[in-house]
Length: 88
Image (cartoon, rainbow, N blue to C red):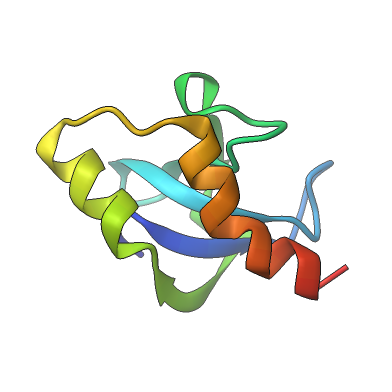
């Protein structure tokens, strides 16, 4: 799992939703956001055991986050829309 990875929540109140990894805290914990209900500035702390990676990475978002550039919630929401719309 890396910054920008698209993940699926397997456990918790957010089970079934898709998120992007916006920060890696340690080997067991990441911060995730979707740009809609969970904003980047208030990213959810989540155990990696409760997440399943889709294998896809949001390259533009990942590049911005790694370079310290601002990522807007609308950008993240738009990028994840495909996953959330096709998997309801």
